[in-house]
Image (tube, rainbow, N blue to C red; front, side, top):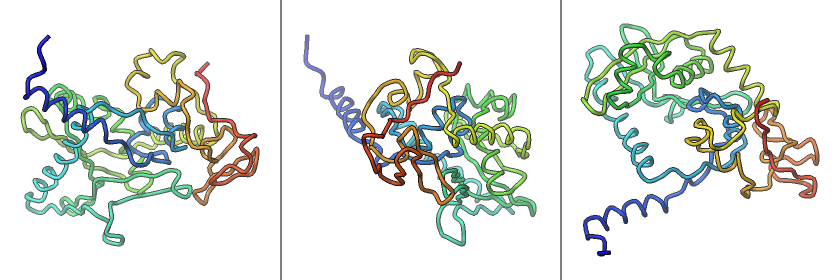
Length: 273
């Protein structure tokens, strides 16, 4: 067997560099980008700050490219006569964000856009051609229901009735956009799921890690194994989120830490019956 060529070795080293990059801190809230995930356990692990399964290098590059494309789309939208793109909240200078329950429920939008005297929540996505064609032909509710759920949570928390959803075709450099109206029935269902998770009653969507819905899940390792996690109130089976944004453990009274590690039981939801 010959040694790897210098060119291929560079590719390997690039991937290795990505593999060394890990998330500095896991989210500890139910976010709009994940609320469309059909598994309640996934939402619960996000709420409780459990670490993600580290994605492979190519996925990290896809995510990074998505952020760069967002900047391109914003620049293009600003070229539209009469359109006003407001990327950050003028009151804070930071990304537009909305929270409930002390931040246990949180959303961060791509911005706001004013068109023809109306203001919309702005959401930007990049898609390959196959995915883009589905959106073009069927609309976001059918083509990308998780994105649709994301928009519903944005609008509910921001108390707005319409969103401007724009997609960029990465393969053909084309755009398609849709005005999405708030759907109270859809939000009621999502809110019911959120309450289920907050009350500690989340269940796994499957009974086996080999299920296709689990294979691509970023919480699969913490969900299906006993991997170590920080011993703190949020990671305990007996803990519940409280309105001030902290946690309270019913078993030992712990808040941010754990007052009695002997009473600690790692959070581990059961498969759905």
